[in-house]
Length: 335
Image (cartoon, rainbow, N blue to C red):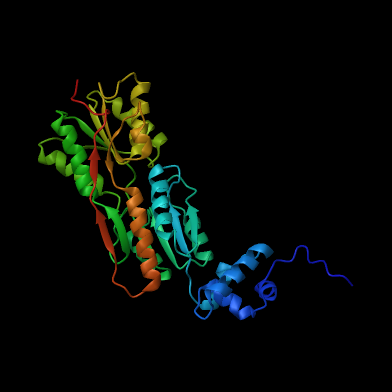
């Protein structure tokens, strides 16, 4: 009887036979364990490549009783800020053997427990979450199941990497006030734990200047939601002359709403966004925006993830980055 092996996966035993060493030595080589010379290790890797062998990283983690994979949860891949965070995380992991497993929310408001569950089922050793909309207590409960790093919002008791939203919102609002605007609206998103700092800082800055805050919450954080909410704002009898938006996506939606009503930007409506995404700098958009340094947030989060995997008992990390207002052509004195 002839056995058909055409569809059988190549194993470590096949690699060991090809090189003339034990399967245990092949296992040591792929795990980076000591006891394998550089010459033998290279011969094993060359043979594995010839035979088409791919190590099973999950099985290796289970054998070592150590989870080395890094899970990355992104709230909305359509928002460029999350692509920049991903880029930063990948840079941190570039020269490491840790796998990066990506999971993206499928809902417009980011509340997708299924995306987080898929990371758990992938046996990751740590989760980098950008951005969770769960309550602080829910995030802490999740962190008790698997080590977690919260990106873009601080959560007490959990590794956190974020930017100074209070300072960023204050700089954006003061910029519009200094231009002479008095009717300044804040286009916010829904209220979630950890996501109200920008609106609170805006409101305080307005009151400190003797001005009345005007906050309108869009149904989510997308451009379409921003356009719908801004259409309502611009329909007011005493409409605002400037809008500071929670993020660039909402600001771009506000821009579309303004043009739909034949209002020029910045001639009749000044706009400030938040994130300083790449689209904000495009010619013809030129959106003034607060830079939260998304790629750096991802880089730091990735570095903390590697440190946490090596030292689970290390103190909780809390990294806050300084924001920067990048002024472009979407703001001007009121007409």
